[in-house]
Image (cartoon, rainbow, N blue to C red; front, side, top):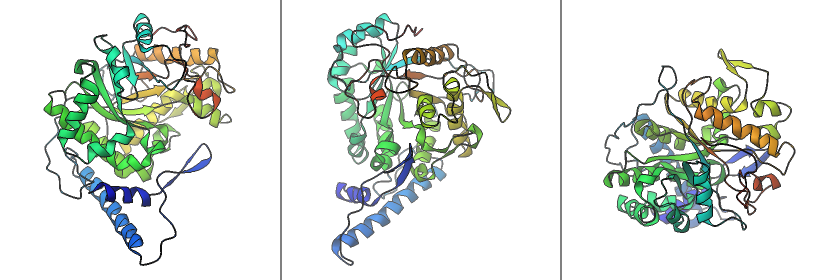
Length: 417
């Protein structure tokens, strides 16, 4: 399908979602003011029909239990090669224990951040072994080369159509020129294909699985498919219902795109990546979510399916597990690609609360506590954020998630190992 036809799909695909009490448009609005029978109107109708075809093809691929070489954007049947099943993940129902790790997100939306070389010294001196970079910026990647720090690197939302609509050679060239030319492949552990697309950039939803498929094939060609995992990071809003955890379900509007992704994750042993913030649950619903419940210090225990929940974080993680199981996907690991607590900017944001939350997250991860539904199964977690970012938009607290100040001094005394 040509780029022009793809853009038409984006123009006519409009869905509304409710978040924080507001209704926001989730894609480009359909052009208005066209006359009935005009060529423009006919083009829109044709585009709408093609969108239905896209969703039908995605569902068909999911039902065939194979997303190896999906080409939903071309309208052509794709050649299908069975993906290798590299990892069998335990869902916590046996005695296996999965070792977890703690990483930190390194956002750079700020004007007062220390030089990257100083940040790397800070990272190493504090025993932080994994870092999430949101963009493959050469100026950010090159300083990490040879440091031994493992990287989780983002594939920007806006690049997805280019990779999805072109041959695998394009993905190979993109990986080599944007990532591997600046840092060794053995430092790259995950590629995050898009960040919170369903929430922030739903126009790109249709490109997630095709892009991941092309990148997977590129990694196979480069001999790196067994060492570098692929997934996509999502906000908690992919759940239409999340309480109690056992009642959780995915938003039906995104299933045509999410279910093929889950199939890919299961076939390749890759994790569902989610951004989990009990802080937002608390500030948005203080009447129903207590501060103590969000901060792991509640004495009140809630029971769901005979499992005991005394904190919001565990309930949030298990909600994703239950939602996946309802769609027939058991055993897919969950990775937390963002979680944190601000130190200022709103009621409930403080140094003490941030310390309490992060300390409990780190302790539980390093001890492989797991969750009530998956006990003893460690969670890989990335804390947000390394530094405060004064360039972040939104409310004031958005600029105060940093574990360190711009002077390199910890906002609170936390250990990462």
